[in-house]
Image (cartoon, rainbow, N blue to C red; front, side):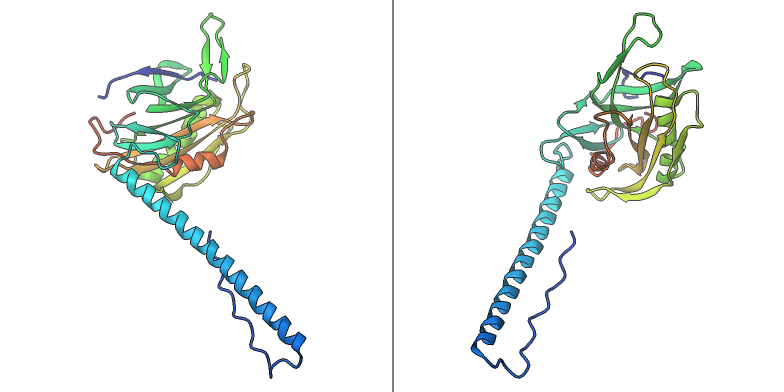
Length: 281
């Protein structure tokens, strides 16, 4: 596995079904007890109906709050959509997303990526304005030269996608590349990817995402192993193709699960006019 590096660069519930009304008594009750039972049944039905109305009201309130949060974030993209989370801004591409409070948000000009193990001058893939999860999850002197590298458990950021045809094309190409670059070099045979899925974030941003993963990656050291990636392709306000990228280790304690990945993805949004250059990391 090639360990990651980063360096500074400069820009250049659905509603419950309605309850049926209690049936009309056929011909009227014959005894006082019968009347009492009917009355209790009617009261019970009213109580259930009231409870159902409360659930529906709660759903409406939650939706209203979510809409209000999305509107507030659209007006000020630095405000997180999830209370207590941190916002990550990439001014180069005019994008933003949120991460949980325990994540480390780096400066927008920081580049994080992977080089080709066969050609150290070639960068396989990378992104800027990253956020790391457990950046010192595992530390290793992979080459035995005394230089210790910290391996993180999760990484997320955004990048340009010059040359891509559309958002789905971005996701199809980049998701398996992240897994290969971060976890399986030089073996591509253990990397698989799903088909692209159309997706709309909380802010109404539309695009497509692809999930990729490895199974059976070589483990030349204790930090190495399998990983996964999720890439969401979309367009920024200028019409440039951009991608939001998550990758992280799998099969280890504390690994970022799918639910959290998708929750972070749901917060991706536009954040003002992008700065030049648009394409590239």
